[in-house]
Length: 108
Image 1: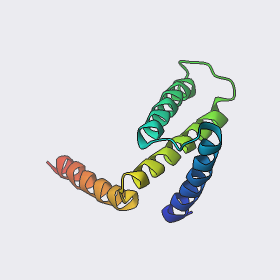
Image 2: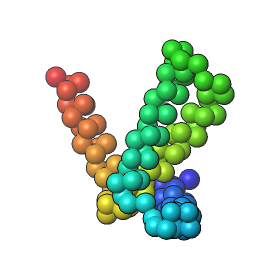
Image 3: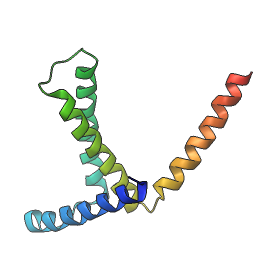
């Protein structure tokens, strides 16, 4: 699957969430509230990683780990969109720059 397909799927889901939020809470979540939700997901992810490496026990952690990684990716895509960031372009640029830096350091 191409990044643009992931992005489209994430944004379609965000539209559904926003409709649900209006129905349940009378308004959509702010960007800050989406970021706070993401922070909760990152905390859950950290616990699942601990389980994955054997220092915590969570039943069925592998399935939960995949779910939480997906939740985190969804949040990042939605936050980038809400902030007007072209995440794909930034990822390509950033990984290229870091790769060049690390390659240069290894060549020393």
